[in-house]
Length: 148
Image (spheres, helix red, strand yellow):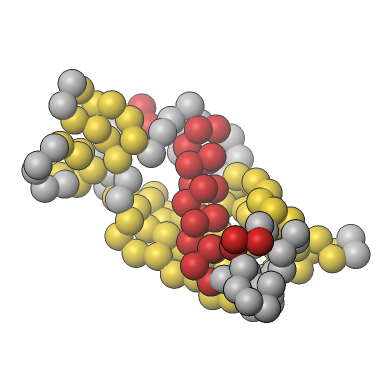
């Protein structure tokens, strides 16, 4: 099982600012979309029914993104998701955003998101739990957590 998940996303007009450059907030939405695709690729969901009244979910603990070059309307971004760290109750994922420019990949941003495995019940606080073994064994972790 590979430690990287790769997807692509076109920059839509609604994702940009008045200069036609991707708005910083769009990167966070793209990270979340890539996360959902990653979970689906494993046969999982970010909201899985646990029992009749409980959902297993992955709320955010932290998120950040560093930008190194602009992307513009109609650009196609390559998003590489890597599970950098798998804790007992959380995952830390890195998102490397790049553009293909004349056959060469140019990194434009790097994001990170830490998510916690939680039980979600209506009208009750979230309860963080250890990642269930059947889910844990499906999620690959980068061998050294270093950038690729």
